[in-house]
Length: 119
Image (cartoon, rainbow, N blue to C red; front, side, top):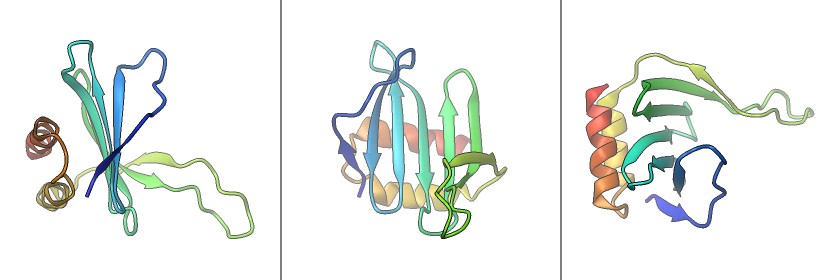
C-alpha cells in the first residue's frame, strides 16, 4: 500500500510535490498554490517491466519505460532514465493502483484513476 514519505526535498521552480511509495510503485503528485493537482508520475511494476505514467496539466500524458541504469555487475550503476514506451494496459494499471492506493487521500486516488481512464 502506498505510504507518504515526509519530508521530501522540494525542487526550486517546480510546484510543491508529495511522494508516496510501496514495494512495487512510486507516486509523485505536484500541487499548485491553491493545492490543486497539476501533475503526477506513477511508476509501477518495479520488479518486472518498470514503467512510468506521467501527466501534466499543460502537457498531457506520456508513458515511459524506466531504464534503471544497471549495465554490468562490475560497473557502477548509471542514472535511471525514462525512455518512451507508447501504449499500456490502462485497466491493469488502474487495478494495481486502486489496490495500492487504499490508504491515500481519496481526492488523489480519484484524480489519478480519472486521468488513467482518459489515456
